[in-house]
Image (cartoon, rainbow, N blue to C red):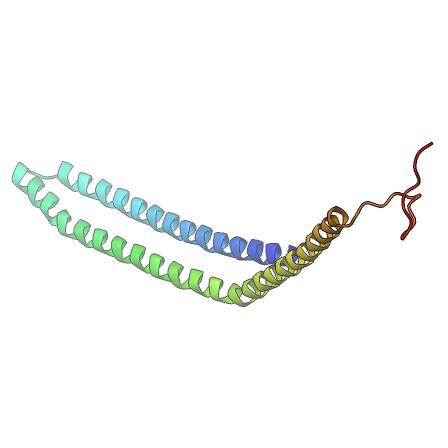
Length: 153
């Protein structure tokens, strides 16, 4: 049983590590995107501020819309790549733990079946002994087989 629990713990620990690594990758990606977006927003704001007229400011804002859309698409692609990599990592981790976990689970099942058989045999023996006590004639210690009981005086 301990071996099976150890195998399960190892599987859960490794899976948790993979999920944590994924969270780190997503966090790193988000930090890069935020940093890039802030830098570009600051640059765009500076360009709009120095624009000579409202049409030039509108032109600058419109010119920045296309790169922003491209960055959103790139961000989504990076998220998809992280998700795909995580799926592969989790599958490999589960696959590497499967033989040991299966083996220990089978050992636990065999042990439970063996114990259940032993306990069933013990219970059957106790029931059989109890039934024999109830079905056998009650003998008094002073009775001797073949003799009639002595009358009380």
